[in-house]
Length: 149
Image 1 (spheres, rainbow, N blue to C red):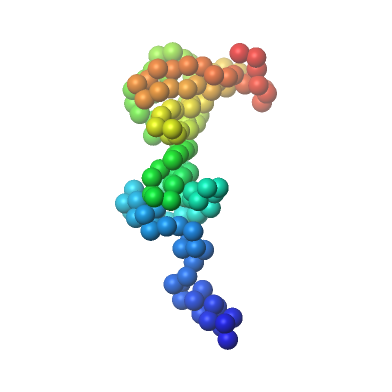
Image 2 (image 1 turned 135 degrees about the vertical axis):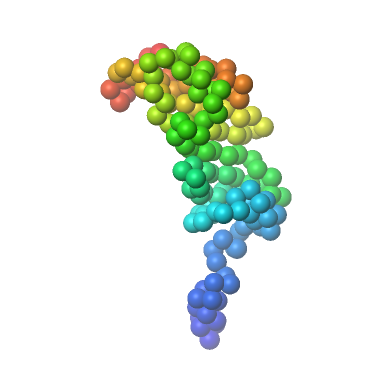
């Protein structure tokens, strides 16, 4: 009898894995931030944090909440067109013959940084920019391996 009850709950949609560990405060904050989100995957993490993973407007987002609904960390992966224009301009000023091939926007510990991958001739560079457009070259890759720069 219990099995039939559980199966009927699952089929009715009133019970889902999301509801097992996603607290109301988190869900309210998430729904306000991403009102049109579909296909969200919730992942339970250590110390009662939860992470939502979703793709919206060609941006893949991993956003981690603590139990009171506060954002601890947010990673967004996207193409050049979503990078703020002033940062794009700074990249092209410093690396005029480059192509931006990917961006990771990282918010953690109340700091926001952009990790930008560019392709220039035979190398791929990883850059870091703060929100004001201060750019630092972190790594370079050649032929698929880490180069010593």
